[in-house]
Image (cartoon, rainbow, N blue to C red; front, side):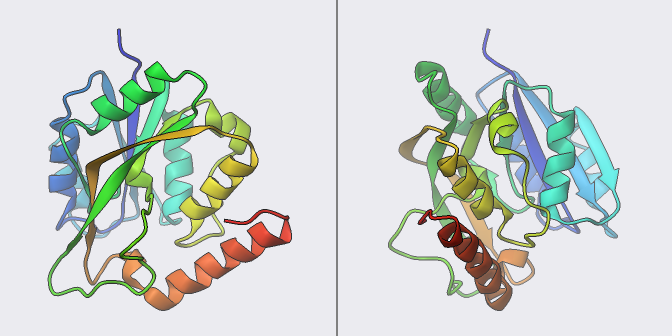
Length: 220
C-alpha cells in the first residue's frame, strides 16, 4: 500500500481561488491522501467553500500567519509524507503520484521537488523578485518525509513571506537529500492580492533570510 500523504492547505480570505485549489487536490491520481485545510482567521466564505470538498481535517485558528498555520497543521498530520499547496495554486493530476514515486524509489531522500509554471491573473505583472530564467521551488513543489521536520524543525513564524526559503536553507544545512523531476506539476498563480506579489515586503524578507544564512557560513 502507498504511504499516506498529508496535504496541508493554509487559507486566508481565499474564497476566489480555494475551490479550484482543493479540486486539483481531489483530482490527484495518487492515494491515500489526507486533506488538511487550515483557515488562518478568514473573514470571507473560505471556510464554507473548503467544507464543500470534505477535508479530513478543517482547522480554524485566529490569524497568525502562514508559517504558524503550516506548523499547526503539521502537528495534526498523520501522513508519512507531507505536501503543501497554497490557496491559489494548482497541481497537475499526477503531481503526488510522481513525487511520491521518487521518494519511494530513493529512500535516502528526504524531499522531492517538481518544476513549476507561473500564471498571471487579473492583470497582475510579473513580480520583480521572481526570476524568469531560474527554477524556483515554492512549497507547492515540495513533497517531504514528515520525519524530516523532526530533524530540521518547523517553519519560522517570524518570517512573514520568507519562511519557506528559510526552511529550505535549514534543510540543506541539516544535510537533507533532495531529488527532483523536471515535469511541470505545479502552477503558481500570481494576482494582485496574494502576499507574494508585495515586492517590497518579499525583498525585505528574503534579505533577512539571506543575511541569516550568510552569517552562519552557508550560502544559498
